[in-house]
Amino acid sequence: MKRIFKLAFKAVLRLTSPVRRPIMARVDARLSALVSGTVNARMMPPIIEALAVSGHRLERIEATLARADRSVAELGGEIDLVLNGLSREIFRLQAQVDGLREALREDARDTVDGLSIVDETGEDLPVRRPGVPDRSRVG
View 1: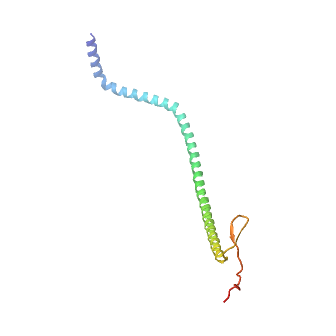
View 2: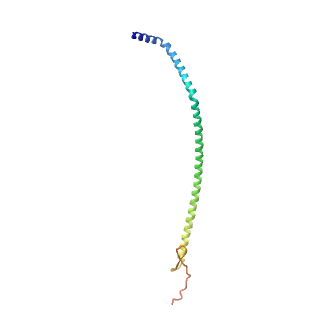
View 3: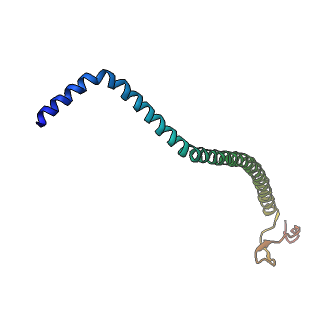
């Protein structure tokens, strides 16, 4: 009995398939439209709102990055100025040190051998003596 019903049902399905396919396609399209309309109506406003908030945050981040780029450029210019001034000062001090060394060498050549005194800093400094003529020499 079950077999007879099964064969009859299959025969009816085969005979009605040319009519059934377009009807099923319309029903499927209608259900898809209803589901997508419902999902869009309920889900799109929160998604659009979240996208607007994300866009605003992205604009703020871009503005912050632009300010950071400007400050980095300004900082680079200031560092260049400081380093240029520092190098000029180092060259000036090196020239002063060289001049002082040369002056000390000249002073050392001018001093007479022998006596030295200790100044307040505790360093020995050579004492200049006027050249005394050698009267005691005979000859």
